[in-house]
Image 1 (cartoon, rainbow, N blue to C red):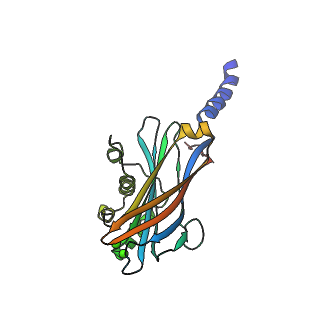
Image 2 (cartoon, protein in one colour):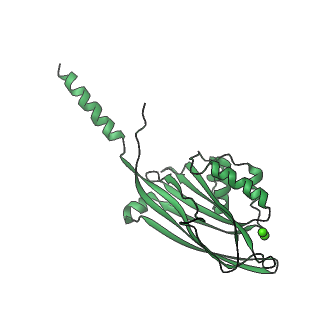
Image 3 (cartoon, protein in one colour):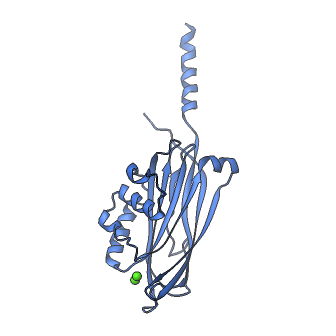
Length: 231
Ligand SMILES: [Ca+2]
Ligand SMILES: [Ca+2]
C-alpha cells in the first residue's frame, strides 16, 4: 500500500532530474565595420555584405545545430565607419544553444558584391531563415581537415536550404575576408567568461587596389531558460 504514495514523489524527482533548467546560449553580433581602404578605388565605393553562421557540436564532436544571418548590401566610401550593433545599419544577431561539453564555432565572411541582384536574392533567402536552427550536413562539417570560416558559412547556408548556386557566388574575387572563433562549453564554465570580443582586420589586393577593412564582432554567452519539451 505504501508504494502508491511513493510513486508520485518519485515521478516528480525523475522529472526534475531530466529537465535542465538553464543552458548556455551563444549570441553572435557584428559590432562595427570600418572601410580603411576600398577594394574598388576607381568607382570610389564598395558594395558590401556579411554572412555569418553559428555551428554547434555536441560532446562527441558531432555537428548538431546551425543558424545563419546576413547583412547588406551596403555601399561604403573610403574611411567610412559603420555601427553594426545599433541604428539603421544594424546587423541582426543570431543565437544558438551551446551543448553541454560541446562547442560552438562562430564564422563570418565579408564580401564585396559585384552582382548586386544576385547578392540581394541571396540576402532575401538568408532573411527568411534568419535564426532558424537547422541540422547541419554532417559530411560537410566533420572533415578532419581544418575548415575555413567560408566553409562553415557555406555549409550552414546549404544546411538551411539556401540555393547552392547562390552560395557559389562567394568566389574568391569577392571575398574580402573571413574570421572564425571557437567557444568550448567547458572553458566558458571554468573561466566564467560571458563575452568574447573579436577584432578582425581584412587586407588584400584586387588588381591594383589594396583594401583594408576592420570588423569587430562579439559572441555573448547567456543563461537561457530552456523550456522542457511537452509530450
Ligand atoms: Ca569587386
Ligand atoms: Ca562592387
